[in-house]
Length: 246
Image 1 (cartoon, one colour):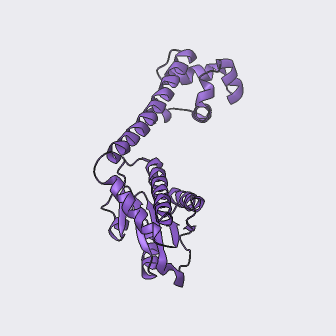
Image 2: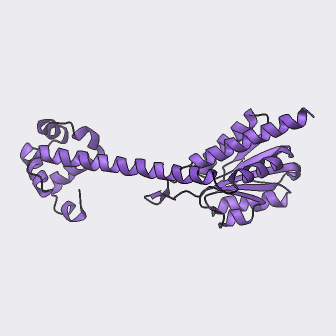
């Protein structure tokens, strides 16, 4: 709606009007022209000139177009999320996905300590994973500090669960190398199995969803990671209950 060509034609008042509309789009669609003029400290005639530059006959038509644009964006975001989740759910019903989770759970069940590592949003999920596993009775810690020092003797009987969407996080790779040297077994959860982190792991669980970015930020859904963490944690708990009943 606001093309670069149109924006370059705005004068100073119209730029301030544009800035207000961008920041308050949902609110503007329900405002009267007098209300918008009062909020932006411009005249109604300035608003009407602004609308004509956007090929709108008046403020009412502008609000309709703005509302359609907002609805379109919301629909795209919803469809994108639905598609990513349907991709993941389809894959969980095929192939060796559950076998990967069982294999990981068997390794974790035999170790005393579980260490979750990740950076950014993966760091937040590392914290969640440690909390979830601890709630199930498995002693767990998390590392989301890229400069966290790793030099401990008790890591030989531990399992590290590395979280990374791209599988190329330098700080996570550095942590993995240090933890491997200390004897920790490495399980990684990544968006594909061809990344560096997957290749240097003992076990990799790839979930394969369409990667999404916004303004250079990775906004790929993390719902599959939560599912994998919880499914693995429950499997570990079940294995422990089976072993304790023998």
